[in-house]
Image 1 (cartoon, rainbow, N blue to C red):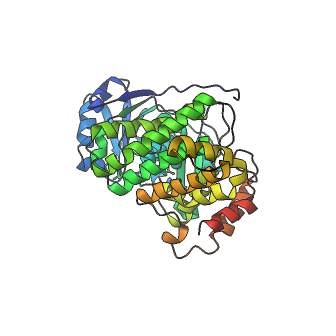
Image 2: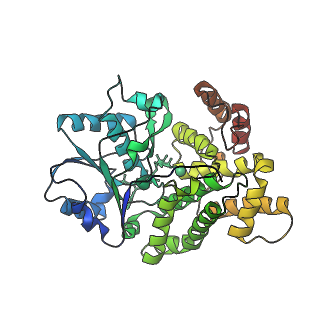
Image 3: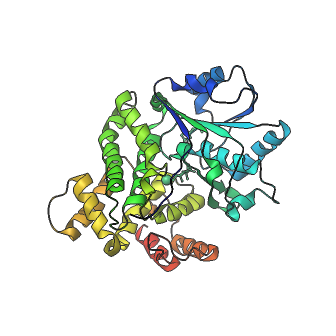
Length: 386
Ligand code: NZQ
Ligand code: ZN
């Protein structure tokens, strides 16, 4: 096992009607900016629950943060923060609203020339404006981690940011919120969380026995709850296990002491930036080719995954590893998620070259757990994904 340090300061308030506990979490003298997305919270009752919790607070609101949070919209929210002298941010939404809020937390205290620097120059945030979240969509794990991904339509870029100052102070997780989520977004959430685990697990054997079991436990739980969630999102038992699995998949715990990959996300983010494809779907496009291309270096963990998660018993390491990739593709299809770029756009020619060039320009010359995935290899993987 590798050496590691682990600190996750986010307080999780989990369970039925947990939103009622909101009023205990924010300092009483705070000037609060309530941030939300395109309006789903106004249709499903979450907005009223949150407003009730904020009765005794001085609040302003900013709605309209789109999926794949857009820089230009966030710059408008930043103006509100400055004009209204906001001191506390509350994100009510999925990964996009929470990520947008993390950007604002950082930008509110940033003293450089333009807040875009935080993304383009990869500036880590040691201390941001304090914020909490009410999660409405289990998927990204953003409610308990310190990362964010921001999109800029103008330049078709999607860049990551983070730092120890960007953990939410608290996150409220009421599994009942999933009852209003459209099937397509539920499938996205399941796929995203599943792939988060794969990115931290499908590397090479590293004697981190417990981390492997954590990862396999999350994967097995997601597989187990998937048909129940898709059939009946009011199934609270399934919803609560789904929600907690998504959080645990990306709150830092399972990546401690182990090598991690994250090349699928790096490539996937570009597909969202160029084509606007949902984040989770880009992962399902890239993952199968990525595992086939890197088969030799990943086959031992692929076979372990096949045995322990998919119960594959036949054949040798190679057979099990190949079958594990097929099982993964079949799982995405079961969720109704297409796994080829051509399923989403006819305009895919040249995409691989374009993304490889972007990685070269950014100096991303060696991705993956061995830092060996050059832009040339990225190009090959993406061509296999057409
Ligand atoms: O905007 P509204 O109207 O609220 O509708 C949203 C949105 O259209 C809707 N929704 C959310 N909760 C709902 C609901 N509809 C009905 N009932 C509810 N309870 O769902 C749609 C998608 O929401 P979004 O927040 O975009 O989805 P998700 O949570 O999948 O977030 C995706 C974003 O997170 C980033 C992605 O790149 C993408 O930009 N990621 C963030 C990560 C992180 N911070 O750690 C890691 C991930 O790998 C990912 O990159
Ligand atoms: Zn993801």
